[in-house]
Length: 117
Image 1 (cartoon, rainbow, N blue to C red):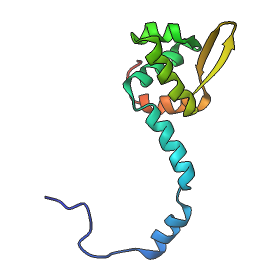
Image 2 (tube, rainbow, N blue to C red):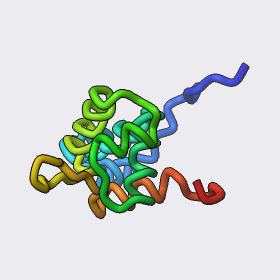
Image 3 (spheres, rainbow, N blue to C red):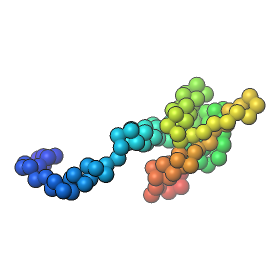
Image 4 (tube, rainbow, N blue to C red):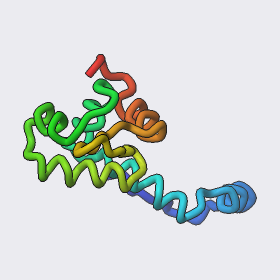
């Protein structure tokens, strides 16, 4: 069985040090990981695709499309909004949701290589 680590210390110090100084800031990494994690749930991914295709939808529409309860959809849309992937606006008594540019870009990467979903 292949081990996942080296058998001897073979550190390329100049290269490793340069990469260490250029690494992603931990706060940025945490924020980006949260965004990626938001699309890691099948229901949230389904909702994001519906928002991509439908442009702007309310929870009622999203609930119908995803075949999930409005309470569950509301919970998932809130998670997408918290991750910065979805924005909302009030229209009378309705709240309309749409993907942000960041949400659309991340969704495109996740769906890359797939036949039209």
